[in-house]
Image (cartoon, rainbow, N blue to C red):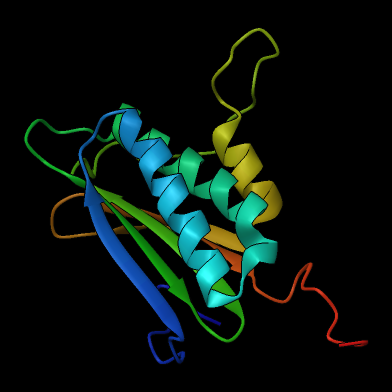
Length: 147
């Protein structure tokens, strides 16, 4: 499995791009990721991957924005997992799953990420942090029988 502590996993596909920390970047990152996943043959992961990249990037923009600094989206596909990692420059703003209030529109993001991801976590960087999650590439994969 690809994890922040296991860099030995064979990387089959990878994409890394920095975005300005503004809401419009979320749409751009989603579109880019959808296109890449389809090109790489992982179209069955698009819905879950769109959700996690939107949630993680939105959190980075809302809670991790530092003026003059970019946020980074890093996609990595290994044999078993698609890893979505979003980095920002504000290491002290640590994400946590919290109980969402039915009246509060916020607080659902990491609950959703936790529901679709195999695992997720936070890794400190020299400046800032990276919030990552992994999706099982085999889950929901179309059967090859009958082809």
